[in-house]
Length: 281
Image: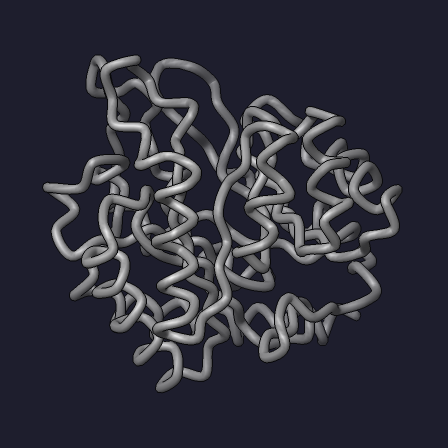
């Protein structure tokens, strides 16, 4: 099975698809500068030691929460202010979600990558607006989408002249608060663009705690190792100093103090997958 043809620069220091692992990681939502800064500082140090390319992630708005009463975030202006400060203080590239076409331009002024949430991966206007910024567009595969159909989402972005597209795998929904990862989806999607495996949301149980989502974090290492060995270009992992106190997706997060060991494991599996891919080719 063929693989995407070209790597690309996400930032001056980060190249995606060149055989070197990339990590998109941070708290689910922008809660405060202090939480973001603690995560950024810790992960930057770990990734420098492990030779992993690191992009800081946090969302200024979580528009698809289970309940209207759930914490959504601090909003566009305050969220971008925090993310811009993290970028400057820690010299890190930023990725954050956009949910509306009008958000693409102001977000691209701060972030080096725009993430398209899974439920919105078919939204043509949103994909075009993201593509037109010229920044990297990271598209999560919808839980309802066949992996081969993500080619069309990639092509929508590329129709703007922007070749910098990443696809993200996060499981298939069969209802009943469960997601299932079909590892065949990774090489299928990797034909069209670099692929990142979303550890956090692959173990999520949407709506599994009544008015909020649950998670089965005990399965995170198993799925991460499997995806790395199959062959991916990086990982998406949400983390928090105190997941039990996180305002969004706490049940799915890898605790910050465990990220060193978790990323060491991911890197080892990633390298196996890269070797296997080279042998097959």
